[in-house]
Length: 201
Ligand code: GRF
Image (tube, rainbow, N blue to C red):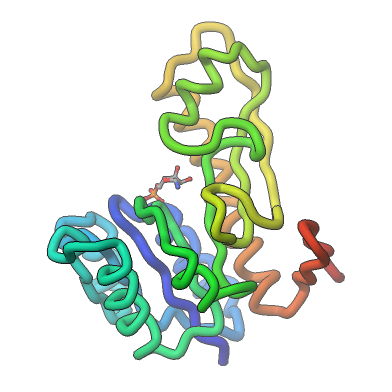
């Protein structure tokens, strides 16, 4: 049984999609813990009500990024995960932390990378006037929102879209591709070669 630790900062809808897929599809894996950097993250309640251990490491209580990442790493490693899943985890991570989980940490970013890194990706897409937008699941490397791409989903940008309508359309796709990518990792189907991920059957 592989072990997954999921990190969240907020509502945790991607975490929820992963938990539900794992149960429904009977993955050979269990969600060992859901950890948040904010005590008020809505997703913690869902996790606890599904019998998943939860923990909070409050980022604001640490003077430096390094100190927080060290505490977070210690907490994560108590659960000895095979995979760390960032699901709306709103923190920039130190190179040391990222290196510790090299090739075993995934993130979802709400844009078609390499376009629109950072925050407010839906507004960035609207401002750029692109006709398609989407989401990307990628392995985490030290450079923010870079790293080998596992999966992408494309949605149209429609006449009259605003940030709300566009983010909603993208989020629906996130809930499809993220559980699928996590499952492929658990099944040993993701092979990183340089900056590319090859997916075996
Ligand atoms: C998602 O749009 C995800 O792509 C981004 O943050 C948002 C998190 O939403 N990284 P949720 O907490 O999973 O509902």
